[in-house]
Length: 94
Image (cartoon, helix red, strand yellow):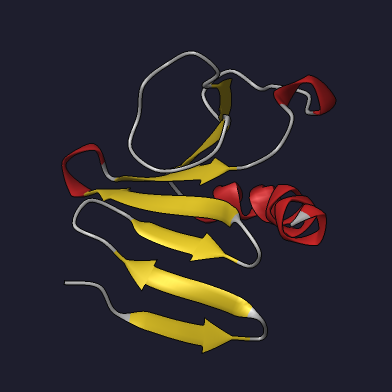
């Protein structure tokens, strides 16, 4: 079942395996992994423009995964809020 909601020009779609966020195109996907106590955030950003950090960000080009985006951000605590600038960049580019 799809449920859409519009907030500040951003569409939110709750899909079976993830939540999709989009404006003119898909911008981000969020996958909750309770067994791993983590949230995976996939952003539509050029990974060549991001400094990748082991255990925090990962280049997903050419790797099959649920959701949209080439940059995976692995959130396991409030420290993960450092991802806010990356999230902002993805939405500004859309």
